Image (tube, rainbow, N blue to C red; front, side, top):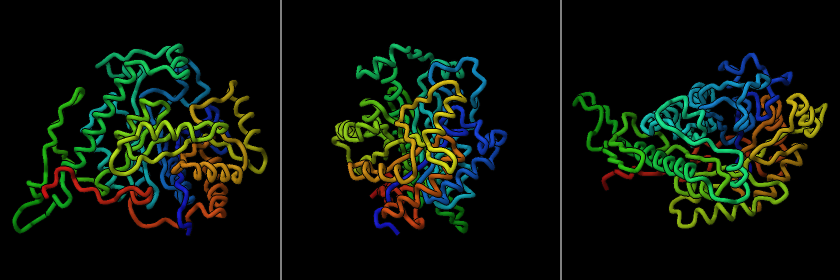
Length: 401
């Protein structure tokens, strides 16, 4: 057993992160919307002893931003990430389950209840990847508010280091309030509030349920929740970030942040930005996980050859917000070990082709890490928070001393 295993998770997105992944022989496109497909991916990830899996989701069809159009050569549909996680929970035992749930067009009360329920059904393995919905097309599904669409010029300016548009900053302010409400609702039942006293006909100890009385710019929520406190107390909250504003949001609201360092520059610049954003944070340190899209070597092709062939199928070169790795499992293990020494707490790998690359991660990358003393040989007992090295004893903020 590795004394200090490297934290490793996987990000699942349909048939894979490459838009042509569904056309690969092993990708099972006829089963993408069937539970067995997702169960198989989850059990493969658990066979590899990964810490967690995240499930991508959004309120729009998959595809690059501003490229929704009429293309039909891509998977243009999604299942609900939280409901996928709920289906996976009973058939897995150890791996953390982190669905993506937006804060922009949802109510925190519903989000709190859904994720608390997932924590119960998974016996303490639930997490939440917080996401904002910044597209006008997404707002159009609901018709309750208008969101200004970001232009190509906006994106160019942001990538060049200019501030985010105020409309986007406001979405993250709203997300911060949403997470705060959810966390307070999780705390609104103290531990032990359910007493189940049959002789005295008392199911709950009423004094251990609390109004949260949250009043902010975006929400007014009285509470308490109608779902008891989750087994973890506070399920793990995560966020993907590429900008100082989002690093600040993660430092304020999340337990860990997914970042996207450049392979050539390494993680140092991003780590410095996150550290600046997290200055003054109390409690657990904000954990920093690096995202990488991976196309691993197979018996017949190198990862680079696989990527080139997929690009030809797609008709365009694949690009991503995260760095793209092509090569062998040993080469990737060396890169992860190097970045871990430089201060990255863990990694979230995005399989270019879900079935093929996740199998390679479980069967080749994890053993390569194990030979370096960086991967476990079995799961320890405990919750997802314990698996990630986060505090596991978190009293309700409303508990009376």
